[in-house]
Amino acid sequence: MPDFLPTARNESTNTMTNRFEAVIFDWAGTTVDYGCFAPVRAFQEAFKEFGIEPTMAETRKPMGMLKHDHINTMLHMNRIARAWEDKHGAAPTDADVDAVYSHFEPKLLSILDGFADPKPGVVDAVAALREAGIKIGSTTGYTDKMMEIVVPKAAENGYAPDFWISPDGTNGFGRPYPYMVFRNLEKLGVTDVRKAAKVGDTLSDIREGKNAGVFTIGVTEGSSQMALSEDEFNALSDADKAKARAAAREAFVNAGADAVIDTMAELPTLLAQLA
Image (cartoon, rainbow, N blue to C red; front, side, top):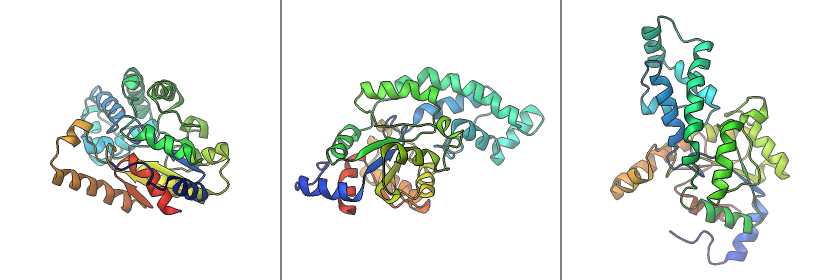
């Protein structure tokens, strides 16, 4: 991998600072939990308790949303809604969303501390951004209760943003609403939405960033969009790695991403080049 900043470090640092005041990251699949597997496992196990086996594609499609909204979206997918009606004799209701969520949350809380390791390149990239005077914010689809597990564990492992907020802090309005980004801009003292960047690994992240008016970046490797573990990705041939990156990149671009990177190691250089 190249250095996180080019050789002309001072020049790059200055240009980054001139263009950007803050970078706002997602959590699972972006900065921690390579492949975003903690929520996937909990979603699938919760649905199975109600006799429904969602596919990986169905489980990941709403990824990045507030988890209650995610379950509601899944329950109203055509195949899952039909399967639910066949199994339970009626179309899914709001009460059913609550019931599935009541099984999902404890499952996720029980495993989250094992999915808070920073992804490759994150700690060094964040250090490079801070050296350039850039503040580090974050948004998430997790709740406060979930973040109370993830945040301290990630900090133990070397990643601690300056600010985090969940949809609990925006009256339950998660992605793709822009309000969590707005709270970051306010807390971090950003002077102009154009001076902030949002980085995420799901289409919901891209939509959140675009709705907030900030520069929006997708990251392919280790993303929920790519849906591969680190071992699975590393086991691919070079050609298949390129194909997986290209597929994720295309999805992000189609969702409106302003830029796409493959790894977090590329982020400081990208921001310097954008100045």
